[in-house]
Length: 194
Image 1: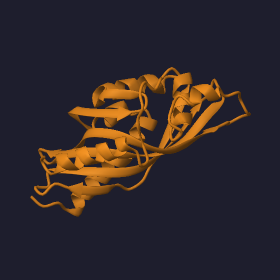
Image 2: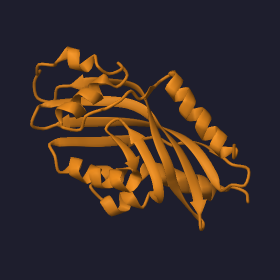
Image 3: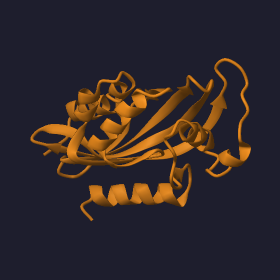
Image 4: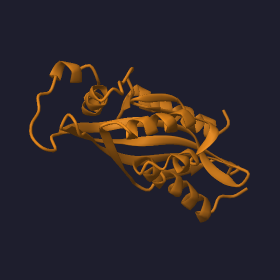
């Protein structure tokens, strides 16, 4: 089976479909994933469908987020049934009760499968490039020691998430890290059927 421009567009639409998360369109967000899909990002690890439910809880909190997504780089398996994509993303967040926000930049590394003619996400992992705090209304005090508990590349995001009751429990991949290399190697081994 060969891949076409239509396949590339379908995958690009899955990436930009992340807008459904920002808009609180939970059923449409769920439809981006296969039922057995998994996701690993700073504040959530587990089944993608459970992530959608957790995102709805976050959406009802004082934490607001917006994601800016670029066009993905895509590699396909030889038979055209699987793909790996890497997509730049920016997250803009604000806890409206704390008057504190952040801008974070990173990438999604995704494994995708075409099942019954339809592409959906099977596995999503994040790599974090850099982040900074923002102060939407006025400067606020920051606990620098708490921020230092996380890698600099996403410390601001982790700090905001923690203050918003969505704690970051472990270390995640950052630009150029061994964790990033492992995520990519594993994804491309999967793409080759290894």
